[in-house]
Length: 129
Figure 1: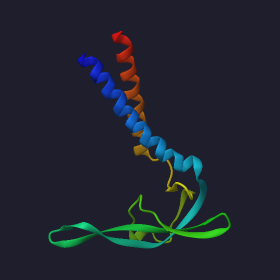
Figure 2: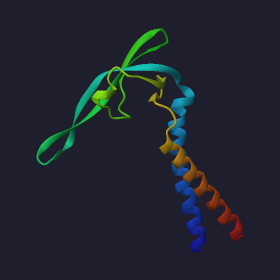
Figure 3: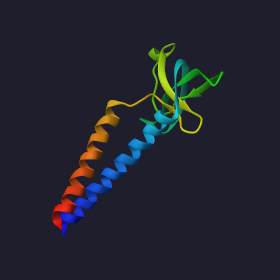
């Protein structure tokens, strides 16, 4: 009984991770690859304070061409630094899903963990019968 619960937990966790990866990949598959220029930084004050002082997060402002028009957006998926200004980066953009910078090593690790959890969860359930 406990082993079945463990197997179901593995499948649920693996499925949850896989769902997140699929959501990230949908931006890449549905988006159009383009080159964006980091034109500035958007500084946003956080809700919490550090040592009674306000803290800020900076996000890069990207400018790129999409469907014969110039688009300028703030990429709130990644934080930015002053060094990134005037750098060109490859992005995937879709009006429906937004901006993605591509498949990262972190997403690769999560997808491997997800597949491992799903595989072992299914194997455990099949072996229990």
